[in-house]
Amino acid sequence: MPRLTDTDYLSRRALLRNLWFEDQFVFALLSSLDQRHLHRFFQFIDELTDQQPLAHRTAVSRESPALPAQAGKAYARLMGESASPALTGARSQSGRRVVVAPLARPTINYKLLSAALLSYAFQDPELIKKWRGDRVDRDAGSHAA
Image (tube, rainbow, N blue to C red; front, top):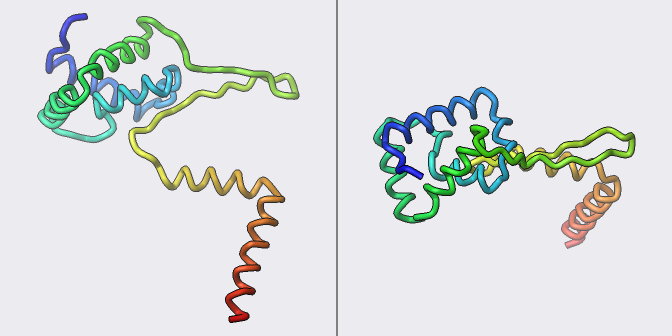
């Protein structure tokens, strides 16, 4: 595979950035590992000057020599040059096909994570009862002292 020039790197980064902000779910066609390779190598989420991503590329390539090739292969898969979708499907009880696809983000979105955990927790009545019971016990213990 030919070495990626600075111009090609910046062009690919710009394309990935546009894809992310226009239709990020296209990244779900890749495995989460491929997505992480792209995020780490191209750092396309951040708005940077041309020199900043080039400096990042040099540093991250020195730190992880295999990353440029891994990101290059992930980029090729994303562009359909060797598609192998990461989508997996199953049938629901009603017979509908349910598809689950990963969407990796470069950093943890704590707001989304906490919302997902709370949503899950409040769907389980036993968990709610246990949480309320634990809280009442703690509160009762502190009043007794």
